[in-house]
Length: 149
Image (cartoon, rainbow, N blue to C red; front, top):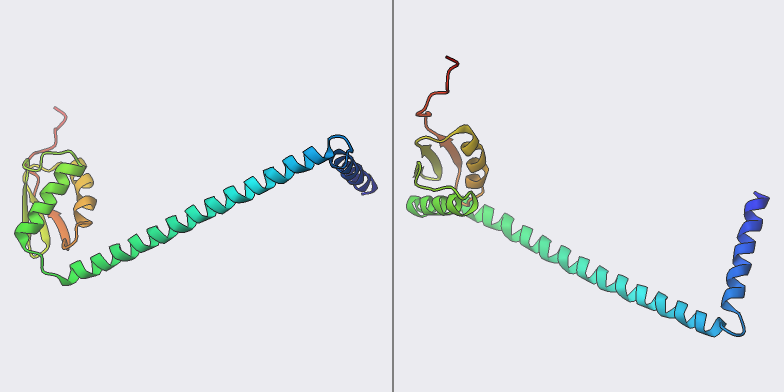
């Protein structure tokens, strides 16, 4: 413990001599002050950016939740919902939306045609996020799995 205290006091004395040097001490103190001020400004800018980012994200989340609540109360026409689904499939999944049929009945979506398991796993969460969609199902697969012959 005594060794650690002695080492600390030795370091403090060296820093004091470094900063209070009669020839270069003024310059060293000035550089140190400038670095501290610059660091504090950077921290202030970063905290402002983080604050604005958090504000905008929370505002966006609030509006997204409000849209979800409103979508549950609204009656979106089936044709509009079908067009939104086809558009989302074409844009996000880069899959041709006419390779299968999309049937919408009061917010319940039925995917008809040859929809593979992998494609259905990719499409299902994307479609569920569209406001006005209550459920997503697919019809029976029209293809048989390959048998080991």
